[in-house]
Image (tube, rainbow, N blue to C red; front, top):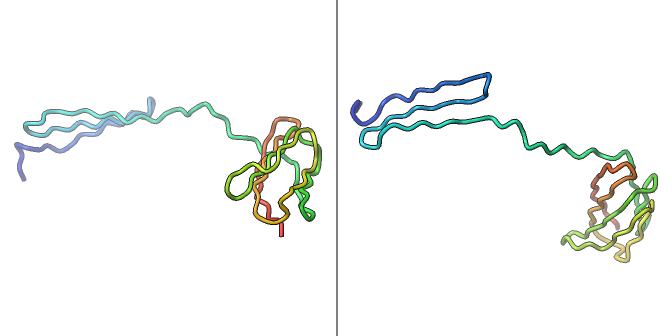
Length: 117
Protein backbone atom coordinates (compact mmCIF):
# COMPACT_ATOMS: atom_id res chain seq x y z
CA UNK A 1 0.00 0.00 0.00
CA UNK A 2 3.00 2.32 0.37
CA UNK A 3 4.87 2.23 -2.94
CA UNK A 4 7.55 4.63 -1.78
CA UNK A 5 8.84 2.54 1.08
CA UNK A 6 8.75 -0.97 -0.37
CA UNK A 7 8.80 -2.79 -3.67
CA UNK A 8 7.92 -6.35 -4.59
CA UNK A 9 11.05 -8.53 -4.30
CA UNK A 10 12.40 -10.13 -7.44
CA UNK A 11 13.83 -13.65 -7.44
CA UNK A 12 16.03 -15.25 -10.09
CA UNK A 13 16.92 -18.94 -9.95
CA UNK A 14 19.81 -20.36 -11.97
CA UNK A 15 19.36 -24.15 -12.15
CA UNK A 16 22.80 -24.72 -13.65
CA UNK A 17 24.85 -22.92 -11.01
CA UNK A 18 22.35 -23.77 -8.22
CA UNK A 19 22.09 -20.11 -7.15
CA UNK A 20 18.95 -18.18 -6.21
CA UNK A 21 19.31 -14.40 -6.23
CA UNK A 22 16.85 -12.22 -4.28
CA UNK A 23 16.59 -8.48 -5.13
CA UNK A 24 14.96 -6.16 -2.56
CA UNK A 25 14.29 -2.44 -2.40
CA UNK A 26 13.11 -0.45 0.58
CA UNK A 27 12.87 3.32 0.72
CA UNK A 28 15.61 5.06 2.70
CA UNK A 29 17.38 1.72 3.23
CA UNK A 30 18.26 1.19 -0.40
CA UNK A 31 18.66 -1.76 -2.65
CA UNK A 32 19.78 -5.20 -1.45
CA UNK A 33 20.87 -8.33 -3.25
CA UNK A 34 21.09 -11.73 -1.53
CA UNK A 35 22.45 -14.92 -3.07
CA UNK A 36 21.59 -18.39 -1.83
CA UNK A 37 23.86 -21.18 -3.05
CA UNK A 38 23.62 -24.94 -2.76
CA UNK A 39 27.00 -26.28 -1.68
CA UNK A 40 28.38 -29.33 -3.42
CA UNK A 41 29.04 -31.00 -0.08
CA UNK A 42 31.75 -31.21 2.50
CA UNK A 43 33.79 -33.95 0.90
CA UNK A 44 33.36 -36.11 4.00
CA UNK A 45 32.35 -39.65 3.19
CA UNK A 46 29.78 -41.46 5.26
CA UNK A 47 31.27 -44.08 7.53
CA UNK A 48 30.99 -47.58 6.23
CA UNK A 49 29.32 -49.92 8.68
CA UNK A 50 31.10 -53.11 9.54
CA UNK A 51 29.62 -56.56 8.93
CA UNK A 52 30.89 -57.75 12.32
CA UNK A 53 28.09 -58.87 14.66
CA UNK A 54 28.01 -58.36 18.41
CA UNK A 55 26.62 -60.54 21.20
CA UNK A 56 26.60 -60.20 24.99
CA UNK A 57 27.13 -63.07 27.45
CA UNK A 58 27.03 -62.02 31.11
CA UNK A 59 29.61 -59.19 31.31
CA UNK A 60 31.52 -60.17 28.14
CA UNK A 61 30.95 -58.51 24.77
CA UNK A 62 31.76 -60.98 21.99
CA UNK A 63 32.29 -60.02 18.33
CA UNK A 64 31.97 -62.42 15.40
CA UNK A 65 35.61 -61.87 14.37
CA UNK A 66 38.80 -60.13 15.49
CA UNK A 67 38.72 -56.36 15.13
CA UNK A 68 41.40 -53.68 15.15
CA UNK A 69 40.02 -52.01 18.26
CA UNK A 70 37.06 -51.90 20.64
CA UNK A 71 36.10 -49.04 22.94
CA UNK A 72 33.32 -49.31 25.53
CA UNK A 73 31.73 -46.29 27.21
CA UNK A 74 29.27 -46.20 30.09
CA UNK A 75 26.11 -44.11 29.97
CA UNK A 76 27.89 -41.06 31.43
CA UNK A 77 30.46 -41.11 28.60
CA UNK A 78 33.40 -42.52 30.54
CA UNK A 79 35.53 -45.04 28.67
CA UNK A 80 35.47 -48.24 30.71
CA UNK A 81 37.37 -50.51 28.31
CA UNK A 82 39.71 -50.19 25.35
CA UNK A 83 41.33 -53.21 23.67
CA UNK A 84 43.04 -53.87 20.33
CA UNK A 85 43.29 -56.90 18.04
CA UNK A 86 40.69 -59.03 19.77
CA UNK A 87 37.15 -60.35 19.37
CA UNK A 88 35.93 -59.88 22.94
CA UNK A 89 36.09 -57.59 25.93
CA UNK A 90 35.07 -58.27 29.53
CA UNK A 91 33.72 -55.46 31.65
CA UNK A 92 34.50 -54.99 35.32
CA UNK A 93 31.15 -53.24 35.70
CA UNK A 94 28.72 -56.09 35.24
CA UNK A 95 25.43 -54.18 34.91
CA UNK A 96 24.30 -51.15 32.95
CA UNK A 97 23.94 -49.56 29.54
CA UNK A 98 27.09 -49.30 27.44
CA UNK A 99 28.06 -47.88 24.05
CA UNK A 100 30.40 -50.18 22.11
CA UNK A 101 32.43 -48.69 19.27
CA UNK A 102 34.74 -50.84 17.16
CA UNK A 103 36.76 -50.72 13.96
CA UNK A 104 37.22 -53.92 11.99
CA UNK A 105 40.40 -55.05 10.25
CA UNK A 106 39.28 -53.33 6.98
CA UNK A 107 38.84 -49.95 8.70
CA UNK A 108 35.03 -50.04 8.78
CA UNK A 109 33.53 -48.87 12.05
CA UNK A 110 30.28 -49.46 13.88
CA UNK A 111 28.61 -48.41 17.13
CA UNK A 112 26.15 -50.43 19.25
CA UNK A 113 24.26 -49.85 22.46
CA UNK A 114 24.24 -52.88 24.78
CA UNK A 115 22.50 -53.54 28.06
CA UNK A 116 24.08 -55.86 30.59
CA UNK A 117 21.60 -57.02 33.23
